[in-house]
Structures are given as structure tokens and as C-alpha cells.
Length: 296
Image 1: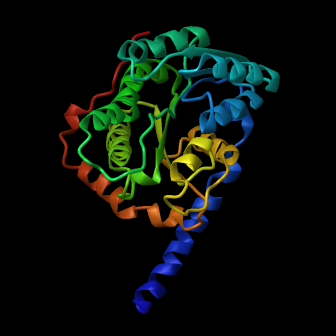
Image 2 (image 1 turned 45 degrees about the vertical axis):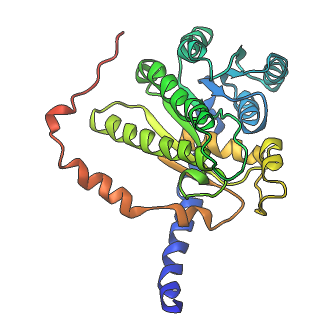
Image 3 (image 1 turned 90 degrees about the vertical axis):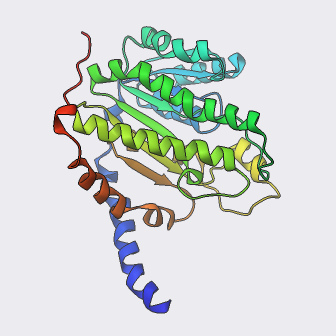
């Protein structure tokens, strides 16, 4: 075991150094100035903070959640902070009609779309799984299927603007985690779908980036209440987390890892998987991957 760690630690150190310094200095707020951005789940927590950071950078923002009162406060604050424009749409991602129409309504307000930030979740108590299938269906509907619905609606708009999809996920979507089986399943599904979609975009020459953001415990009120008395884990600040998510999206990174532990990033990096993704591409019939065309 000691020999293994001696061999592993230098590799982890190199990975960590690469993560910390490779693209960080390349980001400037001007990258998001004037951009037309949707942020879901944005009446509180990380989503609210992302809306404020976008506003400070001079972006056009549409926010959404189920609370009209909270969204009114967020949009007002965005305008105070310098947003080029700020709008809100009230609705629940459990409502299929709202989910299916949301992107079209938001893009009308924005005059197009440059970035889609998928951040919303539904509540899921930390407890042992006892066979509650209604909860599993609800969690998968909101945390996964609504993300796919919004992405399908946004793809033509993002293709025209060479835009970006930013997917907020979790450590529980990379590492099997007890007490959150339905939630973890929904986050693993995000990785599978959006990582596959990224490969499809690459192979069909669609210039839309897909960034998967893998977060540890963040100090939002909702998260801290959920883990109280159940687990002891250091949390990271939501304000910095919001900025790191937007930075990763603007830089078109494939994955971003953020949490209180400095070891989270190098431990989650998987060069073997990345190599396999490239190698497996050679086995597909290249004629199937023709460039996608977008209606003018």
C-alpha cells in the first residue's frame, strides 16, 4: 500500500496543478458581457449567485423557479448590479408543459440564446431507499428528464450562436453515495447523457460546448439543512462556486470539479475514460456522423 501511494501521489499532484493553473488565467468577465443566458433553479443558492455574477459581467439573464416573489427580487438585484437585461419566468420543472415551452419563451425575451445553465433540482431527503418508486420517478423527471427536454429545445438556438450548455451535477453523480440513491442515479444519468451528447457534437461538428460541473458540498441553506446531523463534510462557498461554474462554461471546459477538498479534482479526473472515448470513436461508421444542419 505504501508503495502504491508513493507512485500515485506525484500523478495526483500533477493532475491537481494542471486543473488549478491550466485555464484559470484565460477567463475574463468580458467573455460573458452581452451574452444571453438562461439559469434554471435561480431563486436561491448557487443559481441565484450565478445570476448575480452574470449581471455584474453585463449579461442578459432569464431566471426561473417556482417562486415569483423570490424571482422578482433576483431580477431587481440583477438590474442593480448591471445586467444588460433581466427577466424571470415562474414555473415548475415537474410541469411538462412549462418545461417544453420554457426555452422558447425565454429566448424570445433574450432575442436568442448563448448559454443554457441547467441548475434546478427537486427535493430528495437523505434516507435509506425503501422502495418509494414515486420519489424515484419524480427525481428522475426533474433532475434528469427535464434537463434533456430543455437541451433539446435549446440546441437549434445554441447551434446558431456557437453556444454552451452548462450542467450542474454533483459528487454523488460520480461516486456512489449512500442515503441519496434516487438523487445519485439522476446525477449519474446526467453524466451519461451529456458526456455522450458532447461526443456526438464533436463527431458531427456541432460547435456547442457541454460542461459538466461536479460539485461537492456547497454552503447553500438547502444543502446544509439536508446534511445536518447526518454527515460531517467541509462545505465550499456558493458565491465562489457560482463564479467557477460560469468560468468553466465560458472557457468551454468539458468538466469542472469544485468543492472544499483540494483532492476532489485530481481524484475524479479519469484519463482512462477519456482515452477510451477517443478509441471507441474509431469503431463507429463515420458516414453516420454527418454535420447537423440548423434552420436559419
